[in-house]
Image 1: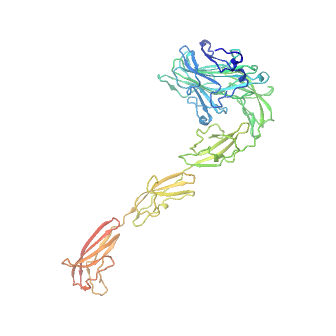
Image 2: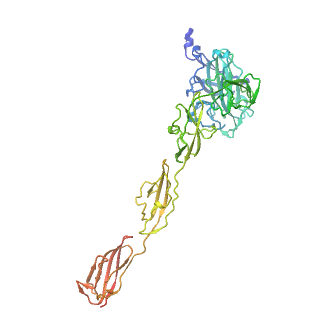
Length: 592
């Protein structure tokens, strides 16, 4: 293929991958040569910080590292498990398994990426980005900052065989790496700024090694004097060359940063101090006034109270750990933001312990100014994100922080109260049939709670006569709060059976019309249904029949008096409680 004139600049990127062995001096282990359309890169290209949620503009490569520590890489586009994007919506509270730091860079960006992973097999990965330094960089400060975090497993190998993370800035036109920043983290016990993880990992070969990590840190790249040049950011990670141990890193670029990596210069509340914060991960910080004539303090944070007049300038001298960046002086101008925005939240959000509550519902922040991007925290200092803001399962105060570009952040507090209705029901005292039990009196009703009654533990079969329970059994009460929480409790109702029935009759009566003992009647107690009473003479002849207890025998048959003597009665009825037949008999003597 032959490219002529401007046609050469109009073509797409040409990539040549060259594998070289620079092991003795630990220089970059690969070179990617790029031919760009210069006109297209007149401005800092978009997505240098992955903020469109993709690797657009970046070149991703992957491959292996051999036993001599030489990388063999080829560009194949991003590999999901080796070039991994994290976003604030899904991963805002996710922690790295070994370092326990956030996988999302705390610089406020929406996306960060992980280069490599904790798999092994001598894997290697790279990612690079080329941009043109603006023409103004020779007359005014131009600073790019990249943020990184590193996790390295430390086996007992030679240094060129160890897991590592390499970062360099390459001057494409002069074909040289700029001296600062440039670092090569090789897994060891003496890495400055690294900490020992309390988590160990054992690989498929049964090998176990300690893990060192470095939390998110920042490196500034002062490109003053490089105006118009193409610069390439290069990052590489690799496992150990023997294939048993891993190394990986997290990356994020402060997109659009052109003057300072100092945060907190714009403040909102004059009653609160201004907190200037230098970039993360440097060995020391020293703060000065604008002309560097007066030292104001040391440490990453500088507290200024009361806030100074607008446009007051401060400077911080940052000194990196050995071999991990460049000494630099950064500047920031303090100014007050006037935005007139409002963020509101309801005072109390009620919910159920089993289902929790959704903090993101639009009704939670109704009446707020439109356009806020909301984040959710469990602490007033807003350092601990709610892991899953769509569902909170613990009662307590939560904090909703609203941010908007070039506006003051606002925070609103909402108290989450997760309570289920409480029913303290006690089993009622036993009663004897035909008395009944009212189970609504077995507990104290609470306001704003509705109650319903059931015959099954799942509360699916309603109980209609819950105020007059007449059968022994287990019964269930469901309480439901006004915001939908339910609880079901059971009680035991005991209905004692009635006392045994009694069916008797006198054995003599005197039907002589003297008003005393003139009629023969049955004595019946209990739940007995009267069916019939038959009277027989000594020969078995039926002389009287009654169908009700009120039909009494007067000693006559067909309205004629029967002679004195012994007669026999036979009673038939039903025990209405147990539903059993009753038959009783006996003798009765007529005396005249």
